[in-house]
Amino acid sequence: MTFTKNWITSFPKQALSIGISVMALNFPVNALAEEFQSVEESEQQQILTGKAIFKKYGIADDLPKLGLNSLVQGEHLVEHVKRSTKVGDEERKSEVFLIQNTDEKGNIDLRIKYDPAKLDENEDIIKEIEANTKIEYRLRNYAQSYDPNSVTATELGNGQVEIAFNYSKFGLPQDIAYFRFMRVKITVENNQPVKMIIKNTRDFAYQNYRINDYHQVVNFETYDNGNVGVKNKRIEANGENSKGTAVSIATIVEPVAFYDGDMEATVVNQERLSQVSDPRYKEESVKLDRVFPLMGDLVRRQGIDVPLPFGVSVAYRNQDMNFGFSDFDIMGANLNEFFDPFKSVAQVNAESLSLRGDVNILPFWNVFGYVGKINVDAKVDAEYTGEIGRQLQDKLNNKLPGLGNAFCNELSALCNSGTLNVPLHLEYDLMGVGTTLSVGYKQFFASVTGSYSRTRMVGTDKWGDGILTVQPMLGYQLADYRAQIFVGAEYQGLKPNMEGSIQGVELGGEEFFYNVGVDLDKWAYLVGFNKQFGKHYNLTVLYNKGETRNAVTLNFGYHF
Image (cartoon, rainbow, N blue to C red; front, side, top):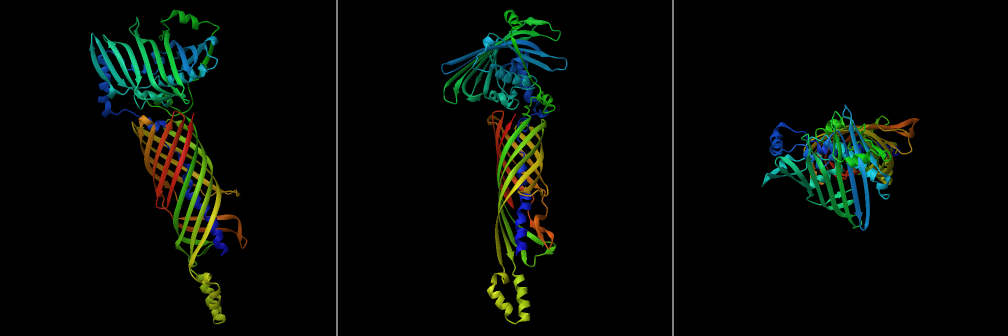
């Protein structure tokens, strides 16, 4: 029976390559797939409705962006930012200047100038302003920042009109996704915007705080050239930190000067312009552009949030497989006469842990690679026919009547049919590569992931045959919760047989090899759920169910 045990020992290695290759899953619910919202002709009338209201009362379509980003006012500008943060009884104050310059190709040079004496020593305000400024830079070309279906107009009399709307749930980056909880009101007087007030409709997370009261007031001014700009912007946010301590944040933004394409200046505050020109002020450059994803700016101009380009994730998977056999061929000898393949079954449980790195080459194209470890507990029930014992019984009876019968009486297990139970515990290394393509429309998204994985028994240097896995998915985004649900299928390019050899095991001077027919289904259904936490983290839960396999996968990822 040694040859049978050797074959059984080798079996999980191949079953593992087939059944566990799904560790290469790419959970393709990135920000692009969640928030892609190209505008179809069938929706033009809805969008025009919102734009028509704006146009009727003399509001520029880009005006709502000024609540998100004051840098969209011009290609060349200087503005002053003053911030106060109070946590309990401790208050920190800082102020800086932001200087933006745009070249002929549209590339932006953004700098922070400041007097070190006006920065709080306990607060890294430069780093924080740099992070916020990067967000504003990404917003400068957003096509549609507000929800056109939410726009309403109320005439107040005396030439005043109140325009109200919500920000879009889809076009906002993760960094400022809390703006989807805001309600905006613009006061218009004689077809000129005077004030914009933004308030929250529910609590939200901001940096390390929980904000329950957000109030932003933007006062507008019409300059001599007829352009409307921000006179000043004040933001007040109140809430608490993780320890329950009261937090109050106040930010005041005031423009200093604007410059048009011919570098003609509109000076709003001469005193501050003189300050920023002081050579004693220190300067920090804000690096805005990133190589990946390629074509990122092109996609942003369509009002689409682009996912952070790089990611790492850890995945845990628990998979069960139950399947039968169709043929036993060991060392070139067919053993179906001695072991009934159609009555033999295998039960395999595998737990795996893998580490994956990925990058978004294009906004809709992700590539990844992964390595991991897999522990396998398997039980093979091989149905023994008893034919070996019966053949020995006949030969012994021919030589000496009754000898074969006595032999079988002593070794009944050899002469009678029965099930041979073999428990196994094996460990494997895992590696693979893959790619994902994704596209979406408003709340809906679709993606397809392909991966190629290989396994190797620990202690050997030979990798098993590669397995191709393909996952098509359809999903729906719960925009208010930054979560997605999805359904799909999983295809594994399984062969109707498993063949291979066991390194270091020989029979008759020849390495042990086998070719076993298996009854495995190539398809399994798939359902899943993904939740994003801020702009960096996400948790994915995935469940697979097929005729011969089922699995649960947990994936925790970080993008930067």
